[in-house]
Length: 217
Image (cartoon, rainbow, N blue to C red):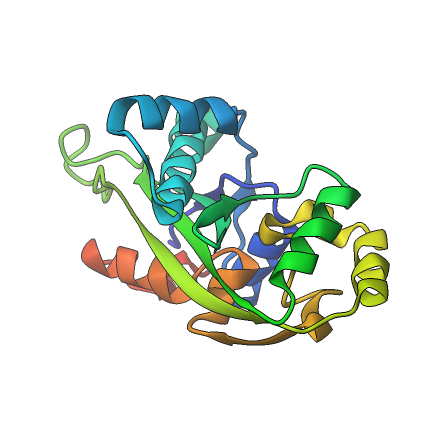
């Protein structure tokens, strides 16, 4: 039997990535307060790098959903993306004005998109049932991809922001949607920029001696 997957994310892009790889997850959106989770992590650990912020939030989302009854007997995957630009971490812009200002800074330059991934195996372990296959694992990692932004003029930026798409995306852009013409290229895993690194997910599963194919029906 395939391993049931629960995606702790409302992102259609992440859902589509898994489906394109042959995985049909159950979607359960976490109720994590991201600002509170980040503040708590800073209080515990001090200053966080942008890549660390992505991992902290991914873990918080996975742990929240793993407590839900609907997430029993599954692999729960939590993800969060942030853009590192000029040493700062950026999530979704608050409004159109912020998205325009951000693109005016980014155009013709590069940033790094970090996506944190956290995986929790909620299946029963041998300690509960000798025949159970659960590992009891909780593990994660962050994937990072360099993004080269196109040199847009103000009219192009305003037209793109007017579509509303940048307001729904970490970093205010996509490479698989309306923003694709405005990205000159990426160095690294493109699925990571979309929101979930399939190669990293495979590597995390491999640490548990589980093949990626075990997630497919």
